[in-house]
Length: 334
Image 1 (spheres, rainbow, N blue to C red):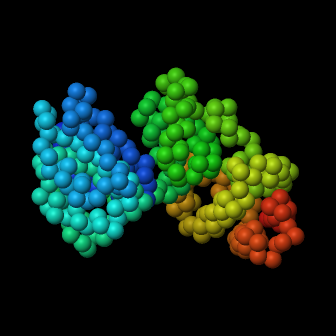
Image 2 (image 1 turned 90 degrees about the vertical axis):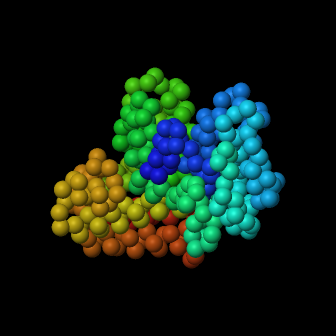
């Protein structure tokens, strides 16, 4: 994430390299860099003759190199962007010779999504010497909330911790999906607004009362009635609340409770850093540790694992998702 920001900052400051190889598991940052280059390197009047968009499935490495070696027409440079370049992965090392001596008046962008290069081979070494090699990893879910707050802050908005967590719970770490929803909110709300759970519910369709965030809270507080209501809502809306994701979230909750109990220091900063959570939620883990002693937490983790196996069809043919979740909640909070 930081490297992507640095690349964009350099480009904005006029530090432009002849080749950008953008790879890795998270397409959001690859798109962010390639879209910025596509929209900003050349003037509109220069793009007709000097900007080309190619697709990996339609071209060969030889085609790309041939186009990259051309000289720009009535412009300082030309831009060539190869999208979906992962379709060329079998032959991508053939780009090595060009990367060793790239055309200085060409900006070649290779969007190599979901894959990465073998760093022992020549292409990776040539890119690092003469261009930019960017490789990213999927952002962990516990970091997505910070990313959301950063995006909104940069655009003049704030978001309440619960609202941010609702987005993470519903959309996970797919940054493109999250960013699309944030764009919708920023179109609707005036700059300077604070995004609340109510705003999320009204504009994105995530219930502020019946979601995994509220289920975790009900479990922490041992509120069995509220937990069962949420479980009933989940089973009535299985597309938005698949059992496998609910189980995963409950497993993470109890693993974090176990970590909390084992901490020698339980100040807010230490807990937040160790558990990978916002300091806003640290108080919940104090409550959870009081309501669930270590022995009970270990038993809950075992129960969750058992239900996870049953949810995948092992020894549970007579049980529906509804039954499995409700039974699990009763056992956990007994």
